[in-house]
Length: 331
Image (tube, rainbow, N blue to C red; front, side):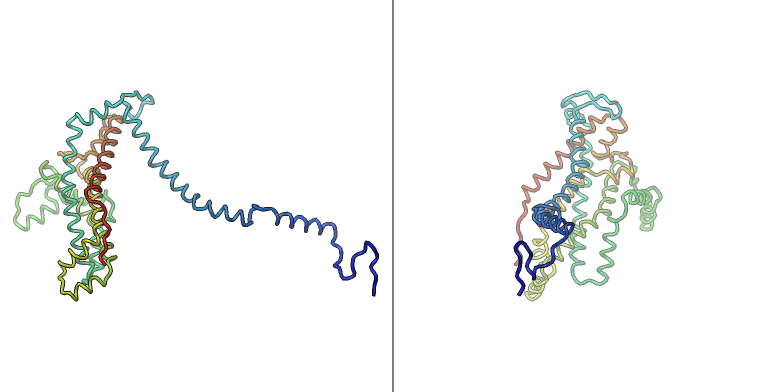
């Protein structure tokens, strides 16, 4: 048996490490013992908690840059007499707002929105009718769904030009009406008594598909067992509509009503392309743009835009109070 001398390593001990190896081992041990290093548990935990905020910061930044900052500038411009060109902006206080409410040429164009407001009810009624029919087993239902939704996919400028040719004197509509004996059709876009109805009808044709998809999706989310129980009880389709379908999509109908109000107050695309606001078809948005870029009254136009924003918010708030959301339980 070997006897170890004092200070010597045991016989079964591993060989002594060289100086470079000992240095690497000490460095690795120290790095492993340090908390919070990148790649450690603490670092991964911090990164895990911060990752959702990174994604949220990008969305909030874009929202602040392209929505709220322009809105603040709009409020600032509305109390000045800026013409959109000069660098100098003189503060005028509430003069622009007073002019908006006292000048009959400005505020009277809100009556044009009534045509689109009443047309939106026809739009929702047509969409709800077809959504109810096509939610049941119907032949060629997918084809009809595509036909109804297709106008909403078309660019608004293209729709404006198509209906411009449709409504022109001697155009497609006059030709079709001539086949049924109407020899003297009205000036669809030239007569001030008819032009707004023509433009509102064009908007109905374009936006019915959006309401149709909303209603169809809401109807299909209703449990199918309710229809089976109604069939067993002998309920007709009309009774199923009032007892099952309409209560189940009440919130979507309320949403469509809000969109109809805000849309009728801010109509722009169709009348601007087809008539440019002529013959009494100018909406409040069209007049706002003309005030800003044609008459170089950006301050007054900004005040008009602020007034429109406030009106939309107030009308939406009233609608939410009059028709509050109700939790529907069909079971």
